Structure formats: structure tokens, C-alpha cells
Image (tube, rainbow, N blue to C red; front, side):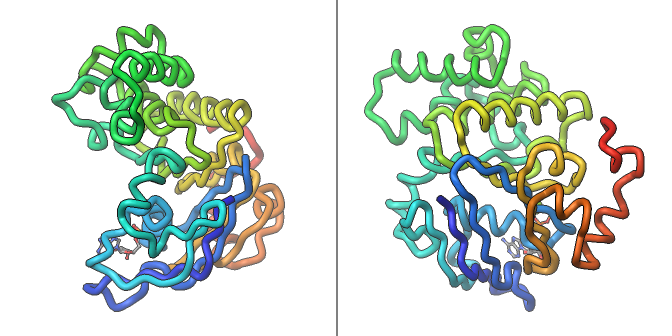
Length: 263
Ligand SMILES: Nc1ncnc2c1ncn2[C@@H]1O[C@H](COP(=O)(O)OP(=O)(O)OP(=O)(O)O)[C@@H](O)[C@H]1O
Ligand SMILES: [Mg+2]
């Protein structure tokens, strides 16, 4: 479904490549974890897939194929058709992703307003459906609230609603739970699992938290300094990490949680 082939990205103002030849594929319905130290190129990889790379600021090469269509070098108009519709994106800070002056509902339906000819009532109906799908109580009430009137966990649910409203094939989740406290984190993970199970949407899940990745992802890829140093079935990688860097990452997980207990 998604195939990243030898992706390289080098920002003009940097000496080292941010992404130095990454190849990774995601099958339909698959949840793939992407882990690795800060600055290893995880976000730049996700931005490349989402068509959000600041193209003027960098040199890039390779291929990104979404169901066979090449996106890395695609013209902006083509990218705009893919953004939100075929690929949904959720980032770490819901507060900064939302416009504080605009009610939540219209922001959840944004993709539909931009990409479809659906009327206002129909968009609202789909937004309420999406807000219900992310298990926000009283979708009609949430629809009319401003971002500051919702908690961090509720906002992240609203962001996920916005990302799934057009029923994309792929969700890119860049540390979607890092800013949330542990209980809320667990609820959001449960929600993501449910969405994957029920709609079959594929996911690329970026996280620093290996424990979370282990619970959610079938496959995991480990990045270090712009390169994928290890990739495989999550259980296998966690049980028998081959690369020294992965071994260090796993050794750094507290023992209690390494055995599978809740954090
Ligand atoms: N717009 C940009 N201009 C210049 N350099 C950038 C830009 N965006 C990212 N970089 C650099 O690219 C490298 C990879 O960054 P990236 O954000 O992908 O790391 P990351 O793995 O997501 O890290 P973190 O875990 O901290 O989020 C870093 O060295 C970063 O400083
Ligand atoms: Mg990042």
C-alpha cells in the first residue's frame, strides 16, 4: 500500500542528511512503529510521506508510492488531493494543530470542505459521526466548543476525528500520545487499536515509547542517524534485537514494563 524507496532528505543548512536512504513498506491494515533517538529522522520521514516536506529548504530523492502513485516528486495539486483524503496526519500537540479562534466541529470537517462538494449539513453529519467514532461523549456539544474548552485528551481525539473523517487508507501518527498523561495515553492507544481493527486503516506510528509501540504495532522499524538500522515483527525485535542500538533502546525500558505490565 505504502512503499518508501531509498528516501533521502538533506536540508541545505545542515551537513548531514536528515534521512539517509530509508526503505520501508506498509501493507493494508498494518500498524508499523517507527522508533529511534531524537533527531534520527522519524518526523522528516513522515513529513515526506504526508507531502509536507519544505521542498525549497532541502534536496530529496527516492520514491514514495501510495498504491503505486508516486508522491515525493508529485506536483502540489496532486499532493493536496492525497492530503487528508488518502493520508491522515496526527501530531504531538493538538493545541498547536488547531485554530484557537475556530470551533472544533468546523476544524474536524476541514478536509471535506476543501476536497469534496458535500453540503454543510452532510459535512456536519460526517463530523458528528467521526467525533462519535473517536468516542467523544456528546458529539454535538463537542462540535460547538472552542479548543480551549476541551482537555488535552479530548483535543487529541478531535484531531484523530479530523484525520479519519475522509476515511484515509493511511494514518501518520507522530508521537500522538507523548503530550498526554499515562491514563489518557492508554485510552488513545486503545482507540487507535479499535480504529485499525474496525476500519482496517494502516498506520505509521512514531514514538519514543517502546512499550507503547510493542502494544500497538505488528512491525517495528528502528532509526538511527537517518538510517533504518533494524526492522521486523515487533515481538521478534523486542525479544531478539539484533542491532546494538536496538539492544540499548530495549535495555533502557524499565524492567517492570519490559515484562508487559502496564506503565
Ligand atoms: N526544517 C528543517 N530544517 C533544517 N533541519 C531540519 C528541519 N527539520 C528537521 N531537520 C533536521 O533533520 C534531522 C531529523 O529531524 P527529525 O525531526 O526527523 O527527527 P526525529 O527523529 O523526529 O526526532 P524527535 O524524536 O526529536 O522528534 C534533525 O537533525 C533535524 O534537526
Ligand atoms: Mg519527531
